[in-house]
Amino acid sequence: MADEEVIPPTFQEKLLFYTTASFVLLATFSLFAFLFLVPFVIEPAFTTIFMQFDPVAALCVTAQVKHLVGASNCSWASCREGCTKDLFECTQIRVNYKLGDYPNITATDVENLVRVERALRKDYEYENYEFSPPEMFEDKDLPDAYPTGLQGNDSEWYFTGARLFPNVKGCGYPPILNCTIFYGKYRPLGNNYTCYYSRVDPGLVITELDMWQNTLNLVYAMAIPIPSFIISVIYLTFAYFKIYNTEEESEQEPLKNDAEAMATGDDEKPTTPGSDTFREDLARFGHQLKMQLANDNPKEGFESNSPPISNSASLSG
Image (cartoon, rainbow, N blue to C red; front, side):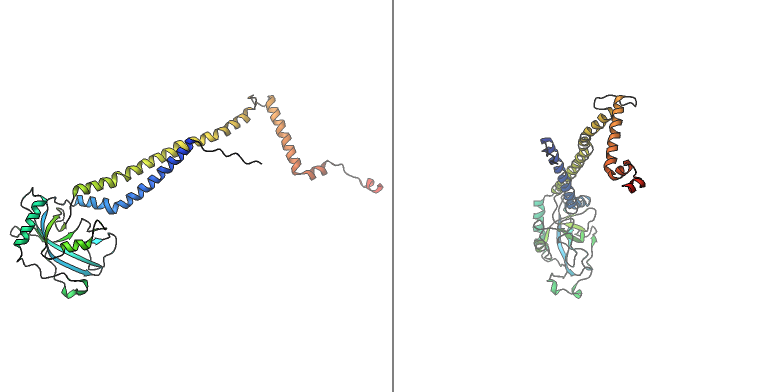
């Protein structure tokens, strides 16, 4: 039997195929992109907003530095390169900070105040605890718990012993965050710099705050993958129930027409039991059935139609 002729797809069929494939890929990549952005962009951005950091910078001074070893000792670290790895070695920086007296203070004014503060506080008695390499630390060298908390009106500090982080999560990835540079800048005891404290948790202080960039990152992380995924799902659902379902019905239409033609006859005459068409179809069906039975059992048919041979005839022969 000759091979059936392959009909090349039409332009409309090609367009439908590539469009559907594109939306499938778009839905897949949008979903994985959203899942990737949740722990690295979306969740930190929401946390930064919920912690309500004061946009007016405060004046911070490094008051205590600890370098600890062991998972039980490293409940937190001031800086981590990588937000998912376990901590077995950490550096903890605690600072004292006070608020500015000017509500409209700018970043330049804060830097000027920091320079004055550094010049005036040369004789300040910081905690006698210098930072040393990790191999020089032992448990006996660690100081007692540093007093932390809000201070009264008679104190020059608003909060003492606050934890210092580069951002709200205290972690990141190069080149955005480099912990070596961070520790080199904020680790020296008595170093003054600007910082931002949380109104929800005053014991949490970060060194960098850009609410506009934080909001922009949140909008980009949610406004691109989520609508792309929703649009892809809507199109794929519509294509499955409407476009491809219509094509299947159009392919089955010739079979229905053939069945209707067989039921009504080629000359479209009614096939009632008393009509000539019905008798002809019935006779044709009986003839085909008889021929099929004859082909299936030729030997049995021959033996049943041949006359019996008597014994006398066989003897005389």
